[in-house]
Length: 251
Ligand SMILES: [Zn+2]
Image (cartoon, rainbow, N blue to C red; front, side, top):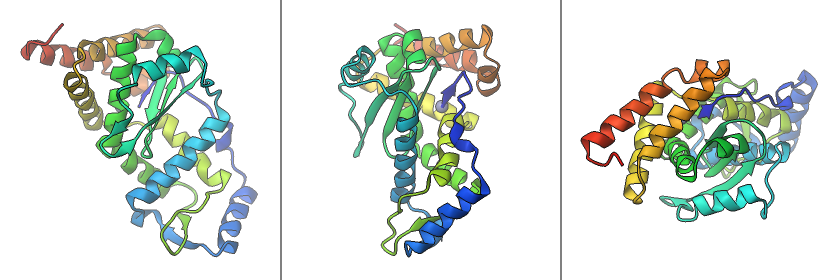
C-alpha cells in the first residue's frame, strides 16, 4: 500500500440497526457462520472481490475509452496474470496518489498517481502492489481485518462458498483496503518483488527508486498522512539504487 492522501469512504459509518439487519438476513438465508480464523484463500479472495466491487461502485472508475484507462492498459499489456491469478486493472479518477492490489487480483490505480509518475514508475508501483498479493500480505491483512471487524463471522454456505456480504460487513473491508499499512518487512519484500519483476521483464529497475523519491517529495510538500505511513521512502529508494549499482544494472 502506498498512500499519501487519506481517503474517506462514507461506508464506514454503520448503524447498529444496519449491522443487525445484515446478520439476520444471512441467518435467514440459511447460511452457516464460520470464523474468520478458518477462512481459506478462496474465501478471502471472495471477500476481497466483493469489497472491490463495492469500491468500484463508489469511486469514479475511468471508462474503457478514457485516456487514463488506455494508458494503464498499455503499461500493463504484458502483465495480465501473476502465476495463475488473472489480474484486472482499473483507474479511479481522483487526485489521490495511491494504488492498491487485493487478494482476488484486482489492481486499482488512482489518477493522482498516474499524473505524478512516468509509465515505468506506474508499473514499478503496480509491481510493488502485486508483490503484496503474491507474498500473501494482502490475504493475511484481509483475514486480520475480518478478525478485527465488528462482525466476527462471515456467512458461508455448507460448501464453503462465501455468500454475498452485506453493505455494512463490506464497509470495514473497503476501509482496510485503502487504509491498510503493512509491516516494514512486508514493504521491503514487496519492493524486492517489484525489483525482480522489472528485471525479469527486461525493464530498468531505476523507476522503482524514482517512484519512491517522488512520493517522498509529495510528503515534503504537505502530506502528513503520507509522512506517517511512509517515513522511509527515501531510504527505500536508496536501497534500490545501491542494489542496482552493485548488480551493475543502475541505468
Ligand atoms: Zn506496500
